[in-house]
Image (tube, rainbow over all chains, first blue to last red; front, side, top):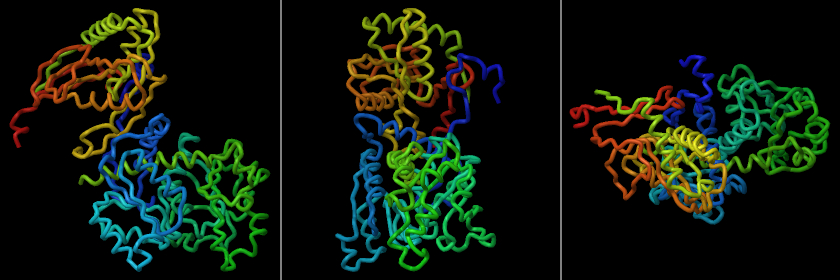
Length: 335
Length: 184
């Protein structure tokens, strides 16, 4: 350890410290955040910072992934996630192929496994995959040597969205440790919420889930040790009290036919994040939303476009974080 | 393994003073100069050179930092991805004279990567190169404009540069690794 005298020496421009190294990175695939260490998440933040600088340049392109092929394999519609991955890959000079299942042989009945084997034979290095079935990317890893990135699987996980949310919070708050985070909305159907709970708790934040009890997933009670500890507070004003981070989820209107909610109007009355409710949170609390927004449903337009909203930053940060992840995965293929 | 000191803190101080004078002498339009330090140890060296130039000429020279990880030609063969650090050049480099600063010049590949990185950022008037140690063994047609010390070395040897800001001490040493270990 260095002495205090040296630390106070004004000629020291850079404080010597243990260098961060990429040797702590253990992932060949990115499937969920439940197997990420705090060190790995910090590494992603660090490299995303450097990638953000690349995005600020007039020429937003670096030659790092020249000659690598990245396939976007999407079995579900997506605008921002697919675009974000495509831009991230292109900014790193990778070759990007988009495979949308509505125009591919999947419509002729080609199975996921057949598609993956084909992608393998065509030399894909990284496959970014979205699938309506929870767990599909895990199965994919058994059939392909390429790295799999889960871009959303069913209700299960959306790790890159969670990492960009964590990075955005980290940018505003400096650290996630001890922050009070509230996630409001349809937790049951939300892969974003699930991955964020893993990420937030790994980084030392306290998480409160706020929703009607019918929209809470099963398995949150103490007997289930495979989920991190969270608080549950169905009253939005109590949940927001003293919050540093407010994460609003999209009410998945297409999944509300099964009678879990009496009506959308009641949901708006009880759970919409509006300006009066937001005053319960800390004055410098940040508001996140993974998009697309149902304005006037889960969030009022005034909050979505207000001072505390970081929703647009989430989109920009998404590209930087995905560039960092693709960069790290390209390294994992050497072993 | 044997270690021999080739530059003491005093040698490093004098050398950087001399290089600062050479930079001033060779760049008549010193107001168009930017010093760009290459991560990691080029950064403190660039800051020290800028402080010297400010001392001698009463003129503050902008200092930037450059990370070349994303421009390396050996990413595929490295075992570990290098940590990407932030490139931070405070002003536009268009039309400016840039002095790239690095600790050791060896194969020239880092300099090649740095030039590519700079040209992605704009169109400088010129790029010069200042290094603390030139150890030879160039693999590309690159030479330094300002050299602290020429240190002919064998490929089996390692040149270790340590600086106060990054390592706590100022020292340049040459470390010989026994050839037997290298042989396998």
